[in-house]
Image (cartoon, rainbow, N blue to C red; front, side, top):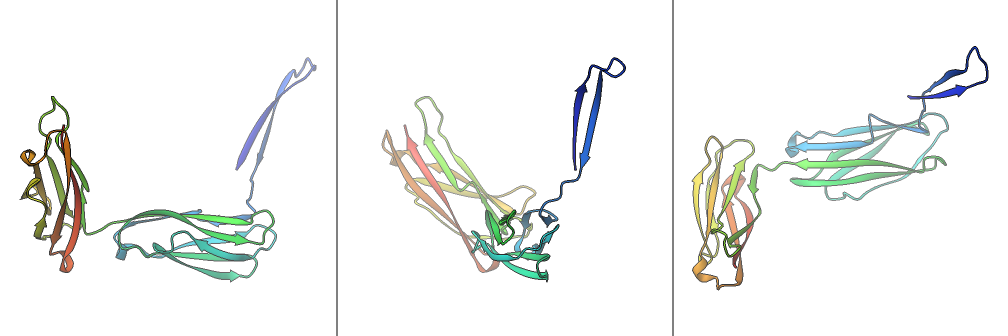
Length: 228
């Protein structure tokens, strides 16, 4: 729906000014219903197939080629509902976890609409979340206190699990573990061992976290210890 107005000024003493109001409905050459965006959010098994209809408003068209830049994250299928008039794009999530953003591109023979881009975004939850994935610890400035860190490991389905193993360089850091309050998960307190980091230098370490969730999972957190 488009609405525009124009003020008209005349030399008519009875009507020196009046307004013109114009209303119209502008139809696209090809309708994309319900919209040209798709969002997948949640656990993988909760995400069903999403469908977009491509319908002509006049001249017939054909989809010549369909491609995507999300080959590893999604799968799609093009259905011909009525040749030359109506096509249906089915898109499903194929990612097990993580975030992604991209598109499915439909190339057509319509002279006014040669390309139709459908934006696809995914926010796929994992059962375990580890945050943050990087820590910056130690003496970060001459007058700054010792900086320590904390890692939180949560079960997004609120199910109990155990940390089966923590692997790290105990010459650079110490790690203590305690359960989260009112949550299914743990907090890891990380303290740098500054006696093993020379003044003006820094060291890097990795904390590997293994759990018994679904037969065992493994996550890593990068740690940078500085001694300014």
